Length: 278
Image 1: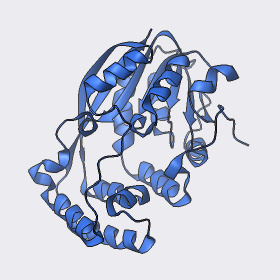
Image 2 (image 1 turned 90 degrees about the vertical axis):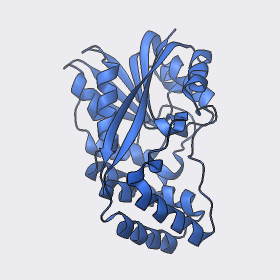
Image 3 (image 1 turned 120 degrees about the vertical axis):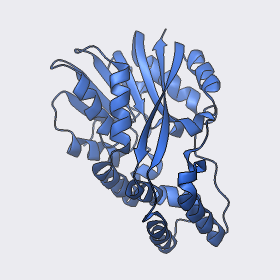
Image 4 (image 1 turned 180 degrees about the vertical axis):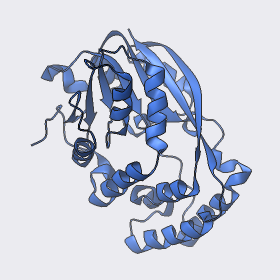
């Protein structure tokens, strides 16, 4: 039985078998989440002996990035609301300096966890609803002066979408064709209310008990096969097409495979946001 950090078990689509399996395989075969987590861990720069909270630890790629920058006495506690993600992380990470619990950050202190010296929320904060509650829960788990770092696609903070670049025309046309065939309009990127600009996110961080939020940019090139597999996730196709029908999803994957076969790599832009707990 999994350790639990309190609160109702959730996880949304990442608790669904098909999505959980697809995402675990994606993380194993592609570098997107591992590379941004590595950049974030280096920017967070925890002390070698720090106890770090990995919020929304998923399949464990962010935990591995943290372990790379910690010393022999450093520790990572990964917390995730999806049981299937916790199980995947335990399969991926065998390092004794890390362990994984099911739940959310807020109840950790009541279970004798923390307060933590630092926290990483890599590629997940836009999924938190309500965002303000998630930030307050995170602050509660940190000691004063602890730094928290969040990685967010720059598009979600109001910057130019990488799909508007000339190199993305083939992918953009394929996505438009899929939406038209399904009678669907392009969905707004799923993100928590209040995560639409750095100013808005910074204000929410301050209200939750953080100070001095600062942002820096980071980018990487995403190869065509990675783009195809990311867009092919069940949760992404369901939002794109407006249906969870497996047949429609498979036809969409075939169309994406054809469209991206000769496509160039695309530059993905991320924003690293760091703030300090008051």
